[in-house]
Length: 322
Ligand SMILES: C[S@@+](CC[C@H](N)C(=O)[O-])C[C@H]1O[C@@H](n2cnc3c(N)ncnc32)[C@H](O)[C@@H]1O
Image (cartoon, rainbow, N blue to C red; front, side):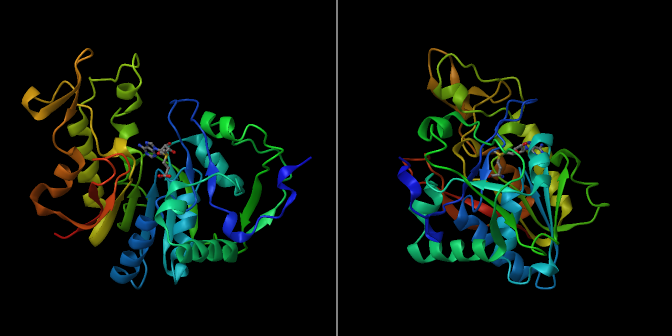
């Protein structure tokens, strides 16, 4: 007997969707619609206020496009904005070009369930359904590779996914492009951008994979000079942004808690694992780089799950001010 023969209402869709590993790098390319909703909603409001006549919005680490499309649903006058969803993973961009999105109706998304009011949840469901329509794929789609996902939902027949495609014209202002943020300067014929998103990917760029700390035996790479990579990244982002443009960071713990590599003097570290001599950096290298010469100012702070017993807030939206 099928347990879930009951129809799911709109509000039961909570946007848990793309779960994948890139085969070449072994890195996660997972994402979901409205990931870290609060930040997305706030960022879109600022972009509309600072660039009412439109601008380029670069969504790096855009994965299969769900982040860029979520942003597009939130814009009041989307036709004024060119959105580029950019990722260095071919697998993610191939999925983006397929343009069909699998959503698990029962998977819980902490951000949506825990942090949002019922009213906001209903609002997000409304704008999603306004812009997407349900479909039956004509080709097999397997995006259930995430072990956590498959353990919890091991019987996909019992909890079938639902598939959605954007309604006609909704995607006109969005392009999906394979590229690396390292080449951001020349992207789009050197044109500037009003907003740059690079969320939950700095940890991949800097080998700051915290599972190397928390899972014993998995030794983190201490050779990568994280500070140098981050400074170069933020310099490039600064150069690419228009004045008053914004840069948006991710909220995963490993974007904010950095394993000290060999370049960090001992006195600037905190010991976390005596036996393996693993240390964290005392300071936040991304915030240091953003604050350099007073070039960016923080606009809003958000809770980072796992940091300071879930009580510590950090600025995730930064504005270029000089
Ligand atoms: C964990 S996913 C995060 C996706 C999405 N931003 C989110 O927060 O839900 C990280 C993505 O960043 C991409 N990525 C990592 N390094 C990158 C780089 N140097 N340039 C562009 N994309 C990159 C990966 O391919 C992957 O799709």
